[in-house]
Amino acid sequence: MSDSIHTLTQVKYLSDNIGYFPLLGDVAYFSWGKGVKNMSFQYGKSEHVAEHINEFYSVLQINPQNVIYMLPEHKDNIAIVTKEDECSEDIPCDCLITKTKRPLAVLPADCPCMVIVGKDKKEEDVIALVHVGRKGIDLGLAKKAISFIKSNYGCKEESIYIGIIPNIAQVHYEVEKEILTNPLWDKFSIPSKNDGKVYLDLLGCLLEQLDESNILKDHIICYKVDTYESAQNGECFSHRLATYGNHPEMQGRIIFAVKLPPTDFQPITMASFLTTF
Image 1: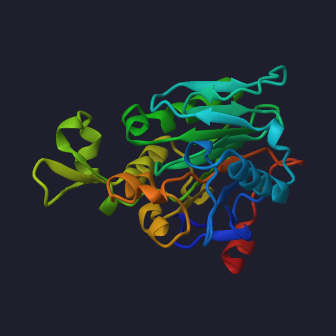
Image 2: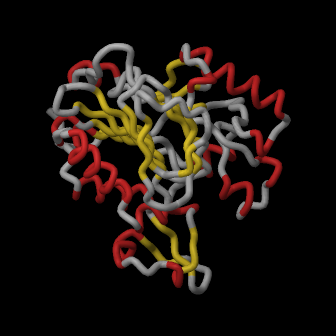
């Protein structure tokens, strides 16, 4: 058994333009790769975006009409999708949790997003989709989400697995130092050449919070792939690149979708994971 986080520096593909987490198997996917298509109606013609979305979900054999979308608020609100929930509307929150087979999705800009999957006290699967930007990290959202599934579902630490999609690298995430009121950023910021600004390491801070939640390192798979640089290469979209980088023509969004597998969740064995990847 490894005692370190599984860090990937290149996206692993289920098929063309669909990335996934080898360790987690059939639970989480994101649109990615050369020729990636915009998935947000805000940044494209409706008929084109609808076609892109349908193409993505058809590969995964997911009915687009069954997907519940998160509308990030950059807060620490947690929402639960229950069996009785017939909701087809988007849900404003930064953490969605379900035990149903309904897929959950978000359209991230650059922020770290993660899937959490675990077993409840009845050994039934629980899955969570979490959007963890700077404000979410400030509020300890990742820790709160993990604490929630532990206390409300009885998930034990050893049953919890986490996957983190590509997100913006520290070198491209510059903010005004005066907005940082939480001392946790002291060890995850470096000075910028621009007065009064610093570069933040969102991923590093998030991983520390997962460690503080006693998640086994061996149960975390993390993409250390920069969305800003990848967007420059035409592999994804980056809000930072489009706005601060002054490339509005490159604005768009990917999809990150998660769902419980058709059968009980079983992570890929470490032996096969390390041998294959």
